[in-house]
Length: 59
Ligand code: SF4
Ligand code: SF4
Image 1 (cartoon, protein in one colour):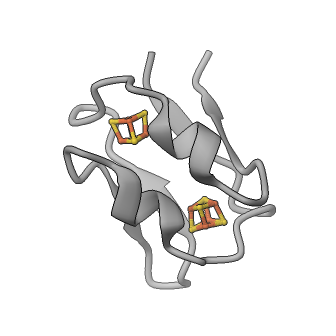
Image 2: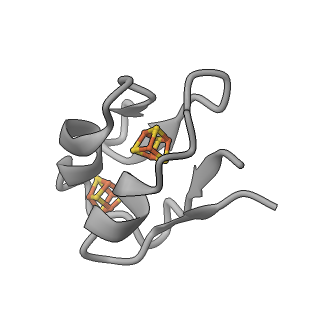
Image 3: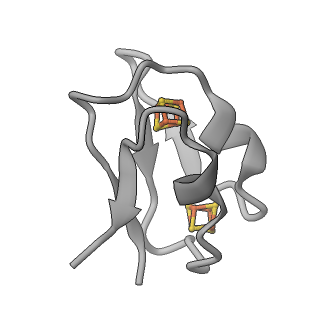
C-alpha cells in the first residue's frame, strides 16, 4: 500500500526523497515531504529511512 507522510513530524531532511527508487516523494513548498500515491511501488524504503518516523503505510 502507498505511504503517507505525517507533516507534523517531518523535519524536511530530504532523506526519503533521495531513497525513493521511483521519485514518488518530494518536498512541498513548506519543505515537508509528500508522496505521490500513484507512483509509489510500496517498497518501504522511505519508511525505514526517515529519522523521524514520519512516514507510514497508508491505511
Ligand atoms: S515506499 Fe518506496 S516507492 Fe513508495 S514512496 Fe517510499 S521509497 Fe518511494
Ligand atoms: S525522511 Fe522523514 S523527516 Fe526527512 S524529509 Fe522525509 S519524511 Fe521528512
